[in-house]
Length: 429
Ligand code: ADP
Ligand code: ASP
Ligand code: MG
Picture (cartoon, rainbow, N blue to C red):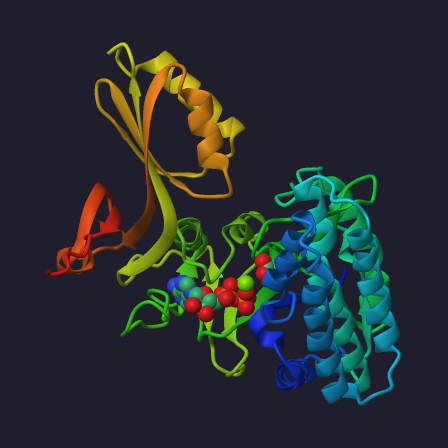
């Protein structure tokens, strides 16, 4: 594999319409002839739209084809703007849509399995369109099916990568293409099982795909192209006066993303840290700007940084017989947490009770409570927000609490975490 191989990942926002695709083409002109693997997400919000198709099909409402039709028109419209009315890419897209139509003709199967078969199509479509566009712009590009490379287990919707096989596949398939001077273009988010069933790696998983390829191919660097200048001190959609962080350590990045800094998928950091590959977060709107560089460099003076994770649930688990929440209870609780795949973001205990704050995903919390209720009293509070502040300053923490009820608060070294809820509004009669 060439030593100077780079991996670029373009997210949904960077390919949301024809103009955006032209912009990606311009960014890539600067890399012409260089060894480059490109990972692309579904265009715009098409993953959500495909989830809509699945829901209609699963509930047998008879509307699945109608929702699918809108997705088709979206993609055909973009192709029309890029290629006009005639181009081989239309056939390719048609074949992909026919595969969903076949699924829709049958009775629904297991939800998670079907999710991956239907929702994965967003990335297949975007990668086909982008490959066709780059080739039309004198940027020779070879489309690769990520499902022939990323081997996973059968945990549909949240599949785990089988690294050895994936690494061997990636090396074998990517090397001859980059050596021939072409770009490699493939899909984020998707993989497949040993039986060739399509799997997905979890929502927003395309950053992770780029990290998998970077790891397997020993990339020189990885860049993710976003609608922001780089990693900012907080989400610019939620906070004013945020500033860009020029350099960040892997450790800092993994802590922030785990607790909700959605600019990078949290699973992205480990593979690139393990091989010490620098990660650049760059703006596709301003590609020559520096962005953020994430490496092992330790910078001891960071500004305060805020991550917000919504959809939190607080569970209070207490023993029914007033026995202490000691080792054996804690062991049982954690076994059930692992079994139901809850992500615990905060915890604390008293003599006879244990509080945890977890992400509210599907019906995992309900399943957990059901399993616990024989031995424990469990109360649930939903609709909470977890705010993590690293390198905190006291006035900032106080201002974040303003107008909220603090349910849990933690301070560890430079980090403060708050689980909060809105103060209920009292309306004057
Ligand atoms: P992609 O197009 O690759 O899917 P995302 O939408 O997942 O990109 O990530 C970019 C978004 O992340 C930004 O639009 C921003 O609202 C959000 N975000 C959250 N936290 C931060 C942060 N600390 N810095 C920059 N962006 C952030
Ligand atoms: N398209 C997928 C999603 O929206 C993966 C990604 O964009 O990272 O979740
Ligand atoms: Mg995304």
